[in-house]
Image 1 (spheres, rainbow, N blue to C red):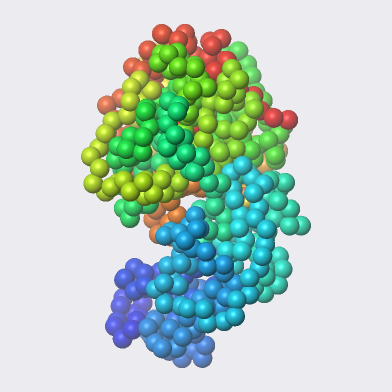
Image 2 (tube, rainbow, N blue to C red; image 1 turned 90 degrees about the horizontal axis):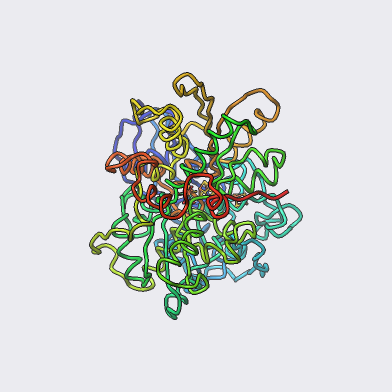
Length: 567
Ligand code: HC1
Ligand code: SF4
Ligand code: SF4
């Protein structure tokens, strides 16, 4: 440890830490804009400036490491003047349309302008850049960009994709796709990582909550909603709760208060996915087929595969993603059950994901001529809807999902974290393949944040080589190795976002260093506390096979629950 003096007080702190990290840990707030704990440090925005004794200029706290005897001041007039100057400069090219901005109330820039009480100090110099509405998942209004560069770094460092890079000069420079192309014309996979790190409203998900609000208002159709595994461990953050607060019951209650007729759980369909995908894996093992078999539930990954590794198209499991499976069942099985025409049912998926928006529009996912899912809203959009309707989220009593499409197991909820689909699949594949009970349910080696995890699993004599990758940058590395033949696996789980869906592009924005760990912990906590933790033991799954689907990979399962991919 080293000794530093901050604002006149001495502290013992660990070495190899930045002034910013140290100050935040001891509760001294330093403003930041370009800093994000998941990204590299660039020190570009100049709002985290501090005074270091002996240095002539102010230093950026995010890029300055503590040394023994360092004397730091964060609260001097000089620091304050400099922060205010830099904020005012940024404000001069900002449209100030907070009241109609989708980031209102969740904007780091707005927050600083308010806290430092900045008024227009410089003449306005607006940029008048047209919106980019090309993407089915994302919306870009670069007039709001504050040049922090977080989007471009997320795309490059987390996703390995470099779709966005800064072009132009001075305050007119903005992060754009190459040659200023609309984002839909690039290799963008719609993961939304750029949007979830954007501190302002410059890059957001395409907002679909308005369409949903309108359906709720008209209420002419049967309104059905489903919620993804990862939403329940993050939604609370939109209401000021700690990351990893489990909000399942309150979320269900809030959805009923919003006016949905049925609240179902995507987790039910995650169990179904395990039945279908697990059976497909065992079928490929027994009858031959393409290896490795890849999981197919992440549309960011499916987009990446189609754009960058199309030769692996047939390696992907043909199982649809869980929310598409559930949508398909709602428009067929459930429609029949409640005596409704599928066109009179409106299905909304609440997802941690922006890529699910474009997935829902794929023609290959139509079910007997109907879209399976009519609208996808993100965790953030759900938070917004709840606030707009003045639903007292904090004080809501917990409620349960509707049955039978709301019944699920621990295996389903872990889909939300990297390694979870693999673990859930192994819990079931082991028992289906060997006919024996699994001695230990937890497959620790697929858990955690390592970029690529691999292992050999013994299915009672049959050795299965498996791998798990999350975050585009790790995925690309792994895919290049698989492609070159350097490595071989039988079964590979891929999630495009860092940490899996808990870190999805539609999740609450966070600049806390521990938000992914906490969400992940909560996912495994839910799993541990579930009475049933294996998909094939879900009674509602058994029942729907008996009543309707016959068996995994049956003719009707193929029609409703499986798909194919684009050339
Ligand atoms: Fe996911 Fe999935 S886990 S893809 O990340 O397979 O979005 O949470 O809903 O569909 O179940 C997302 C999460 C989600 C699907 C499931
Ligand atoms: Fe890059 Fe993902 Fe953003 Fe597309 S959505 S620009 S791939 S970070
Ligand atoms: Fe969407 Fe999850 Fe895939 Fe991210 S990891 S693109 S949130 S499905």
